[in-house]
Image 1 (cartoon, helix red, strand yellow):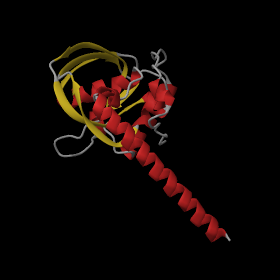
Image 2: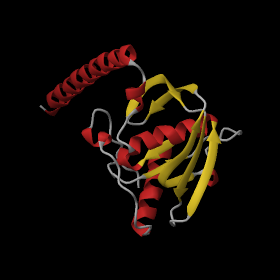
Image 3: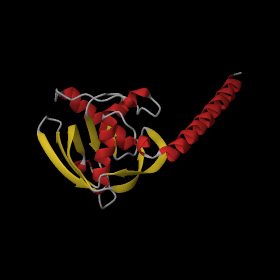
Length: 186
């Protein structure tokens, strides 16, 4: 089932997610629904809090060398713990919860993460490149943070201004659409 993705400035996005303790059918259903939602919205990662569930669950599915987002490459990460963060890189990030906005973000270049899979089994992954970025980005969601908090004061001011203008434009457009529909009903 495709779920609704919460958008900035929804306050739920700033909630800190709690540990998963039950690795049951309910969790499996959440993971499956998150996958369908991420694919439908053309994302490469999604945290449970983005669909309104404050649990330490995230998924990542990067595009492979053939340009395909293969489900066999899907990474389901539950209760992640970063064991190591090394180096530094800058990567342009976007977010399904902050649609249409992309900005350079500074993150660790290499990470080592321990986590559990959908069955509660202990796992570990070492990553660099886009996978390392995605793991850090999605984990930030679990801590109640959005990538726009990492972009610096001036860029954040510009984002806030652009976002408010986009909201006004969207609101005005919706009002005029409602007027047109109302006139058509007469």
